[in-house]
Length: 222
Length: 222
DNA sequence: TCTGTATTTAACCAAACGGTACAAATGGGT
DNA sequence: ACCCATTTGTACCGTTTGGTTAAATACAGA
Image (cartoon, rainbow over all chains, first blue to last red; front, side):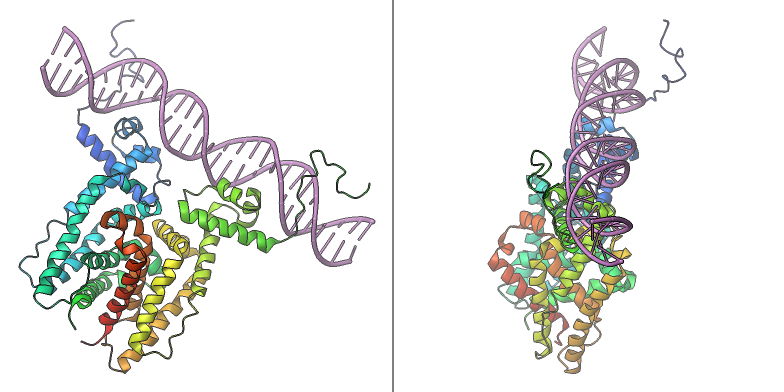
């Protein structure tokens, strides 16, 4: 047969020209997979569906991530990285301890609200008993800083005599996380059972203020 | 022919004798399905696995519940019924408003802790955007009482001048739920990232007290 | 005892699913 | 010129999975 071009034009020569962009392909896959896993869960997400929404093919997903679990693991790590990175924009040094703590709580509330896919991924990870998080040493380090930020504020407040002693910082962080997380994670069931009022703009502003109140009141001296 | 027993012993008579017990079979299926759905999620749970752990067969599941979604829906409704029923044991009328609210919060904390499968089911339901809860009118009514219980205590406290005005009862319930729910739902990821200390007996007792403190302080006049 | 109905059993099926085989072409670095 | 990681494309595979078929057996009322 003669030269390959144009001879079998009907079905073969449609091969598109492409650029080499491993990082782009990887991050595109991760972005699509994040939203699919967040939407349907680990078992519920479909590799074919993820592949279809990617600008590449299923073959490339396996090429880069091995298998479904590997993809999920990478998505989880990437999501933690992105979200924790987004928390660094907060600057609290020149506020009073009470104001700093309130700001931290209300910022966390908003930050969680802005990242529902991440929240859903953490929900899914908890359904799976945190098995995939356990495989990642990296993520733990990212989260330590959250505690030290709370500790710094709290200790300053205790030293200034405005916060009561004897509260362990991780418990403060726990309360902030709980309120901020629940607001997103349980929105559907809660709003259905108890009304939508807390979830429109006014309701969310109210809750945000409540959380600030609650945390500050919790640690303050009487 | 004579009596049915022993005659065709070779391969047929192994058929176990069964009694007609529709309710027993139904509730047995529901119990098994609850733990399987709670363990693996809606997509993750396997009908064959559920059937195997039942004392009946897969066919019976479809006979009684139609399909997988129907089974899940029934499990969800049953779980809400059971758990909300378990809340009725609480008696708060002869306590001061502050003590009543603290008792309510700490009881809720313990009650959630005692029902991890229910919590996980609600997590799963939220992953699915509450679609199955929406199909059930019955459950909403069960939950209204939770709000009125909070409202009764709160109004009494306001009338007595010990609680500040202007807080909507559903927001109080929201905080109690958030803290109690998160404690179970996010235990795996939280303990992995921030340590197990809050989740042993001493830690849980601490958190329970914190929640009582937090809620009471939140509503109290300064 | 007869009979219709509720319940139970075991084998079976088509579709969906995660993952692979195979073949080939291109891009970039050296 | 050459190597090799990267990309594309499609067809395919074995297993798992939710769901079904068809028939048997027990129960309850007449």
